[in-house]
Length: 426
Image (tube, rainbow, N blue to C red):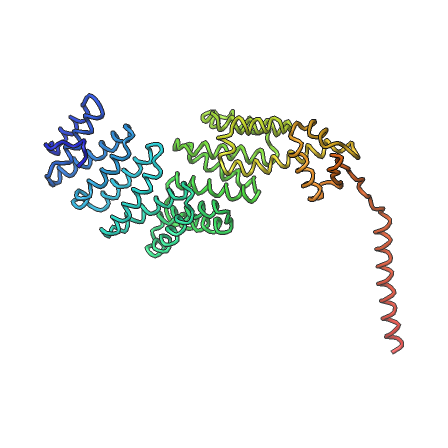
């Protein structure tokens, strides 16, 4: 037993639980609750009080950030789980796993805890609970970027759950699989998994938070295909769902909504969305980051754009979805600026362009060579002289294609007359 436990137990009564709540500090409350759980009585009332004691103890340990004690508690409670219904066991186990997740920096502990519980549920033949703990484990592995292990786990789990036709769990697992394939850059499979999740969700009542997660994933996949208008509508649906539940995911939905507006060249709408009643509720670094990007895009300023990326690194660079789209936006902005700067010249020093655009020379040179190869403009780089030579667009005279078309048509007429004369002669 835990060191917090004392040899003398307290009777499992509501008075004992009340005594724990009245204790002067958390450590005393925890000590009392551990002693309540030591009561050997297994009467219906004692079991009910112990369930309440477990809930309170979990809350106290979470507030004290004692993740290791929560893990030990799950092990200690195994004999108790044999005395209560399986549904209640599942609720307690998932509650304690959720509590560990609230303690910061415990991702590895959560993974090992879930693995332990999977082994225990398999030995105890508690299939319902095992499947849910495995789904949680797959989500944790995905967060930790352990994709291969997560994919192996999900592949087996999906087959098993489909056979049992547990629709609610199937929605969860299909969504997880979609996120996993998206992380592995396999878009067709990510879309297929999302469609499977939607199909399962249509057959049952899905909680609003789950529906919001489906919409969020739909928006992410549409944005990846550059369909930003559809993506915006999905992000808006997700934002409304999460906002009504006061779910922290609401801020991500709002951030991606603003990103879509910037990507479809409507950066001016960003300020309006932020200052709306719903937007004002989520003011903070994430929203400020998108506003800074929108301002830079409106002013077509690379300097402001780079300042925004530097000032809001955590919100922009470290969010893989935002980072991917902003990279392509930065490239577009850079190309537009370079084309505008080189337009008046037939020959210009690369150093001069770099100075005007306020970017490192090697960065500008690399981008110009890429633009030439992509046929964004006709020209060549004279690296010996450090110059860019721009060629005149060789305009084709309109008379040439017209002449060719006329000759082709005359050819067709001659062929037709020849065929007719051949028939008459025959």
